[in-house]
Length: 382
Image (cartoon, rainbow, N blue to C red; front, side, top):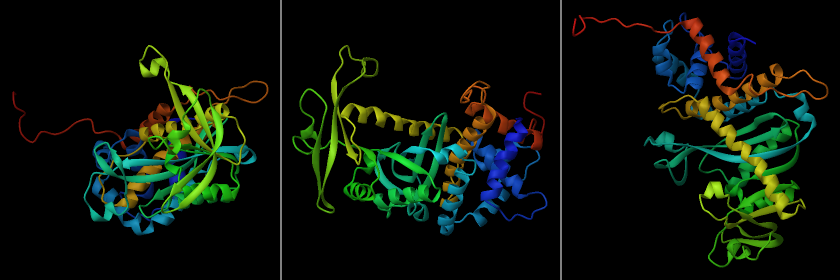
């Protein structure tokens, strides 16, 4: 597999699921895809990419075509296209196995004041100097040597958290995937979500925030060992819900806490439709930490923009997840080791940075790089 083969795979994926109607002489749909991919893998803006490529149209032309065809009022169809692109190369064996799915929310900070963009953001706790974020919900799987994002939703401020979970699970049903268990973080520990999962029959482990001074979930954190019990969650808006919980007593790591002594700490999990002991619950939940890896990988292949087009912002964020899935797919196809029994993957043969290098090299070969500038007057000092 060459760098050009890798580029063709990426361009074909974008061309299939994000068709653009461009009839220019100097600029074609493939040109726009090349700019988007180069911007993503280098973490640059569209303008910077166009300025650095010698045989490339200007950034205003590329942005004009994108703003014309990627519009905020068409966000729902864009979301569908993204989800189709994410699973385009899904290996067949993933569909045959019961999967453990992690659902999470991903926030990208927003610092602008545009009313049009603020309408697409969600509020949250102050982080990185802002309380407004572009928010995405993802369904993620770790299967054998593959880590894949299977579903993605653009979250708006008016969306209910239970509707987000239901929509992602509906997406998994459409794909025909079998779900063994769900893992959700503390942001999903809400009574409507607990009601929905309990009634749907899904097996789930949900991290629960420890609240209260003496009562609430803090009142459960007593004793010298882990245990299971029933706890009633109460809300003025959503009523009450009684659920089985696992209360886990664990210890901080000496290396992590920088203390000379280990210190006991408590974790609380809501355990729905499954019967694991508390320590098993904690160990199983640790599997979902791979979803954080997917976000770190996505940030390595995400373009930068200050566009006022909210749909374009979501497209560039989604492109990061699509490229990470493509990388996993290509590694699965081309990096298997020859051996008896089930083939293993050689992860070092095609790391994410090699995908970045391949795509950058292939695009630079086609358009060339700006390697000199002209001085209109004699340079100073000569």
